[in-house]
Image (cartoon, rainbow, N blue to C red; front, side, top):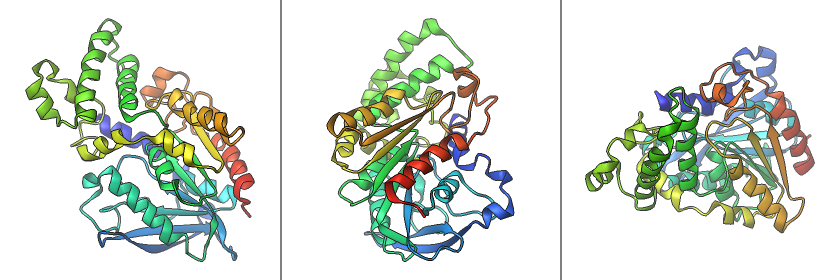
Length: 349
């Protein structure tokens, strides 16, 4: 149940308001499917979208996705938020279905590890950037949720025009998951503040064995019986193995030095944070902006959306946000400032 709520949250922003998109809105974009060949011989399905009637190659957004699995193929009569953003900025939009999703070949997203996912994105970027709808000199990487961690790794060493992230940051993965645990204990309906201290100590010990020592949950409980029951209490363990992704995905994420990757990006960066984000801490976002601007003043732009949750719906308070209750869709709070930034960075038409 927890995983399904999280998966829904990760798509809330993508699908928010889109169910009501008119046929006229949908027709404002044209789409085509392209193929991506991976090193191991898989064929992935990529999608390039652009404002209908465009003639010249356009600057483009390249999407790196959230943790949960699912196809990102364009849908008839429904306009996603990333499509709205591309339209508002005058950009093309590049998406790729991960292995096993949509028409993409492979064993399935639920077996796809972190390193392979990043490599597939990098291979897709290299190939789709040559498409005649795309101006290869003006591509901005856009990472959503945990795609915010893959975004700087995809950009690293590539001559991109900039990077945007929302819903993810640059603290270590261990810190991120410990924060997940803290948020769960503090904001869930079954609130027991007198038990938080002891429970956090158990969870931090468990997460250390799991993420740093790369032990499976079963091995941890066998070696440390006092930690029995921790795994089943964590977010994302109701869909096996963990948020629907293999343990190796999380182990590899825990090895990554995302902040160093951000430092190597010498192009403009924009970071978006929702004040009531249910998962990702503010500091994880701020560390990107503060670090880059300390080294290269003015290179990173900060956008904080008041009362916004992880999917950027607007909530009356943090507890309501954590319960996904009484949220209001306000996509313009994201689309308008971010599209303005995109036009300044890569000159959308």
